[in-house]
Amino acid sequence: MAVFVNRGIFGGGIYSTRAARFLKELGRSSRTMVEFGIAPRHGGDSVLVGGRLEFRPSTPDPFLPTSFAEAFHPTGNSLGYMVQVAHLLGADPIYVLGFTLQPRGAYFFGREHPFGDRPPNYVEPTLAFLRWYDSQHPGRVRLLPGFAGPVYDVLRTEDHDAYRERLACSRPQPEGAGSAS
Image 1 (cartoon, rainbow, N blue to C red):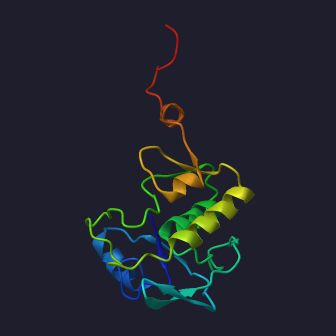
Image 2 (image 1 turned 180 degrees about the vertical axis):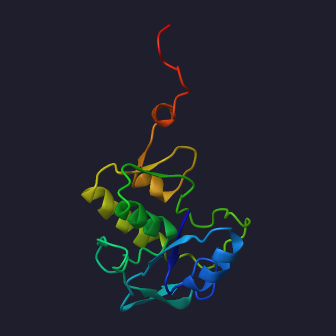
Image 3 (image 1 turned 90 degrees about the vertical axis):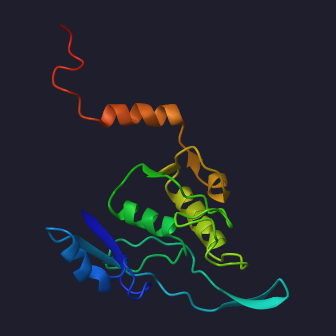
């Protein structure tokens, strides 16, 4: 099992390198740790939102790292980071399940949005990165059907039957299966 951790953004959380010792203690064998960093955002604009001024950081032009030693593009959402991880690992196609980029949607930990009444500022930068990525690598990232949200307007949705067929072909066949008797 490989564990991908950001070397700075999460402080002491379970996805940070500070948790590496803890991760090794949980299992009987040590885990392969792959650290990655995220490029900083510089500058930005103050925007009036709902009668109050909010700072929106700027996002650099899209780019892809060529190794895990280079900083990742700061997409602002785990979907963007995992596309970069999958790209570096050579995955093609890259299948995405459960990402919608739908603000105010349900989360795995409950129905409450973690930002409360503030709109999230990760949606547009992530969509912009995904638009760029798809222009560079058309159709490489594919969404699985069953969800809806802004990301479904940007990336291709895999046909459910084609996906099932691809899964069936990739599974090891039992000995003797498919042979004529």
